[in-house]
Image 1 (cartoon, rainbow, N blue to C red):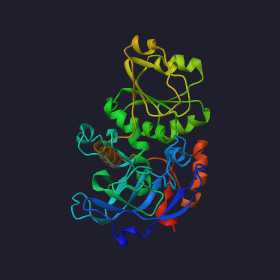
Image 2: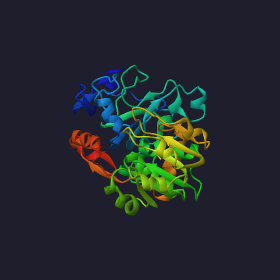
Image 3: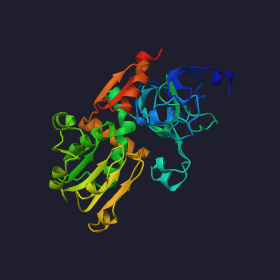
Image 4: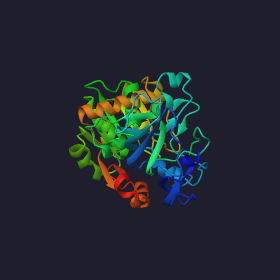
Length: 354
């Protein structure tokens, strides 16, 4: 690497140990290769993955760790072979920045399922360095893993699409949950859940939100446009919904019973699990007797991601966000743990990272 490429030219915020506490950190990005795009980051969404990795919940975090995989910015340089982007374009980067580009999943535009997928932070980059995420001033990414953000789509609102949005969009498209008139249940009303409601309404579905918190009723119905709201701990309300739903998107991160929700699906209904409870437990009868399915999903491939962004721009589907400066990032992670956000924090990198 040249001395020019090796200088510490990137400012970020990093965790140094499993306390997860973030503070300013200078480091170098790799030099721009022939297929790379260098992006001046303007905004970065705050995802629960940022909590998990900065605090070493899974036991393999590599420090210093710069989190952030809902990245939006402006192209400031392109490599000599780049075809899809030019300087000044608005672009996004999601949860991964590389893959093998040869396997069946890569060939199908499902790179997130590639065995050699490289995560946007805490992965191993092409130059052998540890990837560092979007809580930083700029990033260098192969053009394949960048997404065009339409000029008319606000950049701060685009950030949550790149993880929260695509995580619920992918199973909805895969399981044909975009059929007008069908019924969708959404478990949990956080960053992912509120996007599932928005996509459901955009697809013409009848949407029911399930929550343990009565305080979310007004926002589910009035703010997000859901058709029904059910307190999931109320057995009478749950019984009244028996065999009424075609689909359920389960975004809940905490442990919860599955059989009560499975009983709400019609014959042949599908529950798509996108949260990570510590275990999934249900009776075989919940599946077998009514031909129901449970399916897992995690973020999505490049093809679906660009389609989703274009759909959001065309139909004016916007996440609900709270914009914060970078020096509020530690507080935001604490609030995220307490579920004290409506519905996604977005860091204003451009105006606060100095």
